[in-house]
Length: 350
Image (tube, rainbow, N blue to C red; front, side, top):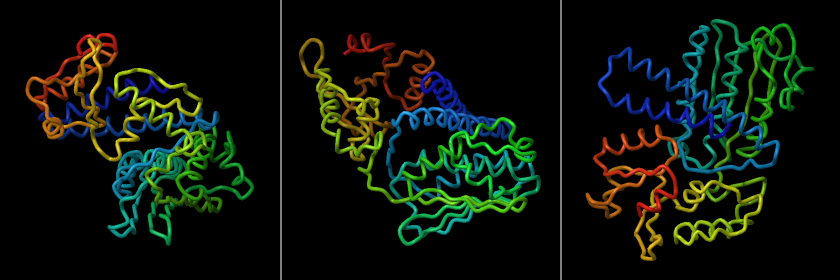
């Protein structure tokens, strides 16, 4: 699911990004924006499925980065605004954060998943012409987030089920408004909220409305957890793994179950905020070849890396459409490119 579902979704995102660079009519641009928002929602739902498997098998981890809280919440509300508008529901975003407090360190993808889940539920269980309010405010230590609606509410005796696995509430109202729900969304939210802050709570009155509240902590950038184990406990193995890749020795260390992370994540995790890491890698011929490992790349960074017109960017991907999209992206920035379909072909090009 993680690979086969996400790959076509990422391709669609990249194709939309390319199309947005063209001269489009207002209606066409609007269609692209709607498509982009729908793909974003699909990616969230696929993420929920993958995260459920990770949580069930104790493989879940946080990935903390610096991000702007206000921008994240505005984007989430925008993603679901059309869905709410179709039901005549208005979504109000009340931000009460000092400008200096807007940028924090936490796992923004998990926060986004929680907010989208809560907003989606609020839209489902709020009748037409209803009101949803998302409040974001600074407390003494954390950021408090509340999602309130004036929907059908939840009976007291059913509230205990909300955060349990497969804890779907079955009654006449919820069955009509959410016939396909299985009761996993809030269980996932609770597990996330326990990690990103101090948990999640609910306050509801039947047929009057519901308010879900959770907190977001400003975590240290080095506060990464994998399977509940602090990064420091297996950091040396990951560093050894990274060094073996960058040196070209390909002498992979022995892995425990806690170090099965993607290579890209390892490189990004230890870049300490730098967009690229310049090292040398050993070619099959034995001589050393300067290379730049980049977590992101634009024309300015390419030039700053000391490259010239004769130094190409090497794209390696087994999916032809991926190679086409990436090459098109680089062509638009006048960056020289060569492509390989697998690691063996890439090594021959070196």
